[in-house]
Image (cartoon, rainbow, N blue to C red):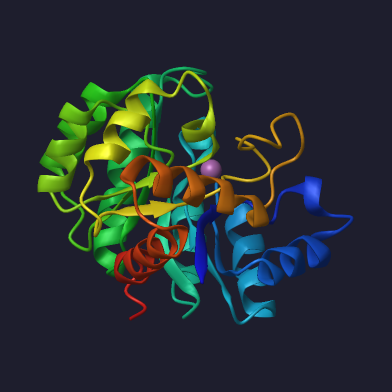
Amino acid sequence: MIWDTHAHLDDKQFNSDRDKVIQRAREVGVKTMVNIAHSEPSSGEAVNIATKYPFIYATVGIHPHNAQSCTEKTWEHLIRLAQNPKVVAWGEIGLDYYRDLSPRDIQRKVFIRQLELANDMGLPVVIHDRDAHGDILQIVKKHPPQEGGVFHSYSGSWEMARELLAMGFYLSFSGPLTYKNARHAVEVVTNIPEDRFVVETDCPYLTPEPYRGKRNEPAYVREVVKKIAELKGIPFEKAAQFSSENAQKLFRLK
Ligand code: NI
């Protein structure tokens, strides 16, 4: 049994075949998926999808790209949605200094606000960190998530990973781990303890090899598990088992 801990099944790229995509995943052993929100509308969609399928969970939250669109009304709406029992985390939240689609000072303010909201709601957090390692580390140290959380599609160094692991975070790996230029992630996976990693697709983005160039979907998370098994020198089944046990602990579903 495998968990895809980070899927955007609400994305419009799945509008024509969402049911089939979900069924394909189930058929190859990807039994549980977490639909990650990135905006106010997508938080509502994530909860709708999780309500429809017993094996799909949801998050609510605002991605740093959408930080400048937030108002007090946004938080009121998200707090209401987060009370749904299928909501297992607050995210994805964080900083994105690669695309800079919202001004950085607003990204930081909205990130801190959501770390506080997650603590108020008793939820772990799903963190997006793109080219913002220093600021993210500083902020999570100052505003530690009380229920822990995960760094999704982890791309930082092993040195930073060690700090995050010491703070109790899980690290999540995705398609880029299978790419030829994946040096950092390979080093981190090789070294990470077996009880601290989870896997994800981030679909429809970040498609793993050998499907690169196609739309990504939860069934392909098996390629990430395969790569972790290879790097750690353990059987595929063991890597799958560790990642799903860790996901259950991360989202408090054990
Ligand atoms: Ni994502």
